[in-house]
Length: 327
Image (cartoon, rainbow, N blue to C red; front, side):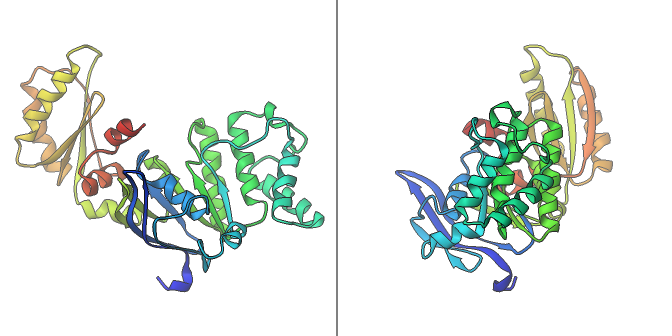
């Protein structure tokens, strides 16, 4: 990537909180006009990265440049170049939608004429046209998130930073937010997206960096990362709900792990994921191996690897287990 195309450039970034290493020498670049995803479980270092990008936290070491401006050298200018939508809702329950937009427009010193036109623009973008006079206390959680997004866009920043934008949203609102993010890309806005949702990263991101324990494990296009694994996934789900399922899953895992064609396994609830080079050649052997175990099986499915498998490959542990431990 040409340096002039990098809207974000992070070099050897380090941050500790007491004995806890939040960021451990990370480097990355975000290209202009792209959706970049920082993907990792809770506690991996995503929010610390965002706080440094948004000038809320100073790094211990390293350099961060946003749109050609050093974050430490000129934090005021950096704030004018970014829109930031944090994970937590920031709306004031007693202000109307229009009053929220006016407040943020004033923070960025927009003129009255520009303020009105931008308000109409962002409300149309996030589907809130007609909501101008509604107080935030009467809005649903999903609508409040849309308002947060509108406030972050009021000054038409070249870079928008989204920290877990669909966390806690229902399916329809989540899809709406995804649609708005893709529209921002179409308009030329660069998007820096923090998420721990694999499907969100696969659906939206041009490039992802997987972060784990403060380190970047791998960076690349989601499709390219999946194809590099050169393995398929067979998922075996145990039937019923009983106290023996844990033991049955362990028995199943032990049996299939002895097969030469099995490259690895992970457990997820009542499901065992089995990683193989080819579904077509492995499935008959796995069926034969499981048929003699007297374990009730609800279903056996197969698929190509997703970002869950990419995470496992590059970090050495399942994403789900890490999320449970850090939550």
